[in-house]
Length: 196
Image (cartoon, rainbow, N blue to C red):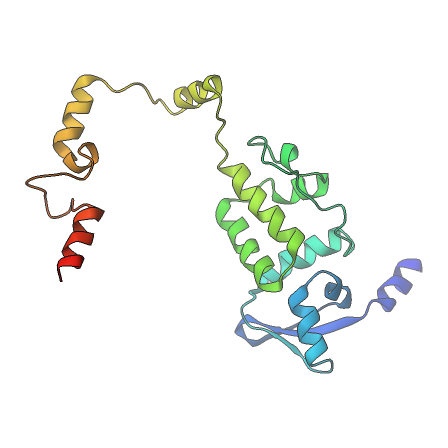
């Protein structure tokens, strides 16, 4: 009975998202989305047009906000990315579970939605989630372990010689003679444009 009363008390706002699809969201989204707050203030009785928001993005944002009951005060990131483990970089376990299995491409789509809707906490979470996925440790021991895991070894003199022959521009500080057409340096392009 109490859940039914809670459900009846939720005010909904009508939105039009990508592909002219009409949907509804909890009115509490106004508390967290600067864009929606602005659009509602400008046109309080109209359907809100969010044509750049896809249905997948809307569903993710909606589940994220519902998970936090539209109160994002505990949805935070730590000041600095500390490792390649989300739980070391997020303060909320629910956020860790939500982002843990997502790919960088999926997080990027959520980031686009967060930027579009201007939801600052979600923008921060996405940025840190992406940074966590590509995090590389910077101490010597960790770098060595990382190199070994990718089968990266030291280059031999023969490897370096072969690379110099194949990619002369990479080893000459952009001072190449007899440069292949696909190996023109940035400086030479600038010089050619200056001469025009």
